[in-house]
Structure formats: structure tokens, C-alpha cells
Amino acid sequence: MARVKNEALSLKSADELDRELGPLVEEAVIVEGHTFRIYRPDEAKSVGRAGEVYHAFWAELWPAARMLAKAVLREPWPAGQEAVEIGCGLGLPGIAALARGLRVVFSDYDPTALSFAAANARLNGFEDFGVRRLDWNDPPGDWRVPVLLASDLIYELVSVAPLVGLLKQMLLPGGVCLLADQDRVPSFLLRETLSGSGLTYTTQTMRAGQPGGRRFRGSLFRITHAGGTA
Image (cartoon, rainbow, N blue to C red; front, side, top):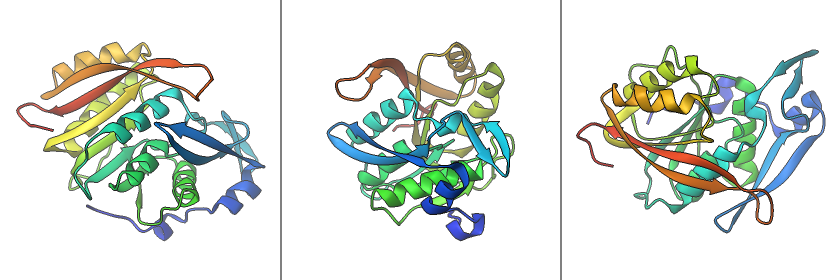
């Protein structure tokens, strides 16, 4: 698997993130009997950086990330399987994959998201992982992997075609992409676009939430190359 050293991206530590973005929240996230610790900004949707406030969807721990983490923990992965989390945000599904023994690269377009994913992986005791900045509209042509993980990526209709193109380019024949979505409106276009892309998929209903708290419903897409096996 192609890896990029964390230092090459100038990732910030948890202490540096805390100083730049204000006090971080450390949340205990329970999934399938596993307790993960997750740092996130206190103001989940407004993250300040260099005096500027911008809208950061990745800064909140969305329900579909919990759904995907649950699916990852349930999956019978081969030992040492290579995986990339796309649009990793805070990194919960990738951390769940690390807990299952997968070799994980966290990818996102936003370097601050990558810093949080790396900090959260270390918070949970993991050091052997990769990070890589990834633009869906310009994916590296030589980076193909057997497992892709994705959650809460299609907020807008315009995101669907680039995402499907990325999956088609990066997923090895016989590999699998697990994609969780909270059944937002663009998920209907996702189904249509996948059907015409040479990729095949099945879906199953997923529910997730903190024990004793509100439960959310969504769908898990299991996406493979046509004719491939996962």
C-alpha cells in the first residue's frame, strides 16, 4: 500500500489542536462493546483557524460513522488487510479497522481533519497507520487497494459522480467498499450512478447510537467491481 509519512503533511498534535481550536472535547464512543476515545472540536461545525471560521462537516461525529465502525468490527477481515478511509474526518471507522488488525491509511482533503484522525488513532493506542491528502477530483492513478471505507460523504448531489469515480479507480477487482449513509437525499442518485458505473452493490439497513441514547437509521452499501468477489 502506498503510504505517506505523517511528518510530510505537518500534522498537528492533540496539544497543538487544542491550543489552536480551543478546548477539545474527548468523547467515549461505544461500538459493539468496544470503547473508543475521540477528540473533536468543541464547536463541531465552526472550527476557527488563523482567525477565520469555516464550516467543517468532518468536525462532528456523525451517525453514519458509528454505523460504519459497527460494520467494520463485524466483518471477518483477513489478517493485515489493507484499507483506506475516504473523507476520514475524525477517523472513527479507520480506528475500528485498526482495532480489527487492518493496515489503515486515513485520507481527507482537509489537513486539519487528517491531524484529528491521526491524533485519535494515537489516543486509542495505535501508531502504525498512514495519512494521505486526497482530492476526489484528482485521485492518484497508481493507488489501488482492496478495502475502502466511507461514511457521510454525500451531502450534496454534485458529490456523487466524483465519489463513484474515485471508488471505481481506487478499488481493486475483488475488493470491497463499505459506505455508510444516513439515507440523505443524494443516496438515491448514488444508487443510480453506481448501477451505471460497472460497480455492483447491495445495501442493508443499519442503526447506531450511543447506548441508552438516540438511535439513528441509515444504509450500509457494500460495493464491489462487477464480476469480482469480496
